Structures are given as structure tokens and as C-alpha cells.
Length: 284
Image: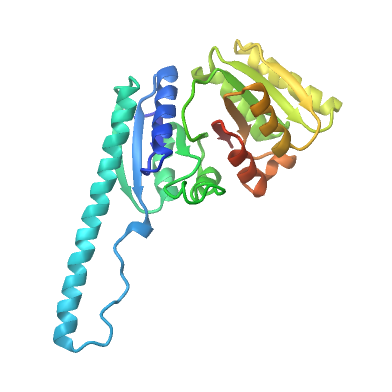
């Protein structure tokens, strides 16, 4: 099935938000939702040799016991994964979506996405994972890896869902920034939403021309977008703008040719996604 919404759920406190945002996208686009839980390698049975230097008979019995424990643990991990998917399905169904599939995968999460995202329109992931309550200052360990590898837009869900009506587009004139604007212009997801395209940095003829091009592209698609140039640094000014002017969603290219380039390459990404209390859509 093509054009589906892939929602990654892990049982963390962010999973409900991932499901709610996936349902919101489905409501606006008509796309089906596929809920995926990946049993990572760290959840695989322990292969270390715990038998030690024990005489042969006892060692054999211990190895048998360990093998049985491994099998039981694998069953429990898989059962937990299926339970997480069942709960996720119930949330998306509660939100009014009926076209839902679930899938339990084994292996590395990035490899899994690489195999399934070709049929997707977007990948939805929580800002942080299972250790969210224990590591409040850190993003999910898989987030940056997924954004680096994904060929589709990545929708990073905030801690809780709230209605989305006002969208901030961070624009630096780079290829991925223009791709982000083009994505908005083509997607029914953004129809009827208030759009503002903002460049952070020097007010130059080049930056003004870039905003004019972005505005023209959006206007051709039926959007009357506002534009603005702000002085300062993107990681500071964009977060401040989101908070002070009540934006509900931040959209930005994952790579650029200015300081926004450090998004998903250096600490600026972590700072931007962490500091914004709203969802962030990253487009390569």
C-alpha cells in the first residue's frame, strides 16, 4: 500500500502523541496509518556465556536452563511489542481512523525504516523514547539516526497533541528549505492552515528574493503565506517565535547552506527540536 503514514511506537509516554498526530495527518490526507514497533537488537536474548568453568554435567544443565530463559524472554518481549501495538491501534481508532495496520519488526530501527518507507508519505516518531522521564534533557537516541537516513519527511511529535492551525516554516534559501516549501504546497495536510515563512539572519537582497520565491510557490498552490526576516541565530529566534506567537508546528529542511545546516548534523538540531514545544517536520 502506497502513501501510508508510518507511526513508530515504543510504549513510551510519547507513543500516545505519536498516534494522535498520525491520526491527525490521516484525517487531513486520507492516507492509511501503519503502526510499527521495532524490537531492537538490545532486546534480543542475551548471548553471553554465563556458564563459566563448571563441570560438564552441571554446565550442560545450566546451558539448557539459559536457553529456556532466552526463549521465554524472547516471547515476553514479542508479547509486550504486540501489546504496545494493540494499545496504539486503539488510540488511532479512537481518533476516528479505521484504515490501520500494525507490524512488529525485529532488528535495527533505521534499517527497518529503510525497507518500508518507500511506500510512505511521512514517518512519525516521538521526540524522545522509552527513557523520556529519566533523560529529560536528551532526545530519543534513534531520532537523529532516523532523520539522517530517512528519505521521507520525518514528523517529530511533541509530548502531547494539540490542534494545529498555525505553521512556521524556517527558510534559509537552501535546497532542502525550498523542498520543504514545495512539500507544503503539494500536501493536503497543510490546506487551510496559516503559514508563515521566516528567514533568520541578515536582511539581504538574496534572503528577500528567497522569501519571495517561497511565497510565490505557496501562492500558486492557494496559500496566502506571510514572510519575515529576523536577525539573530536560528536556534534561538525560531524557538522564541514559536513560543511568543503561538505557532503549532515548525517545518524546516533537514539540511541547508547556513547555520540551519547544523540541524541533524550538530548540536543545533538537538537544541531546536528539544527547545520547541511543538511538533517539528524535518524534510531532506
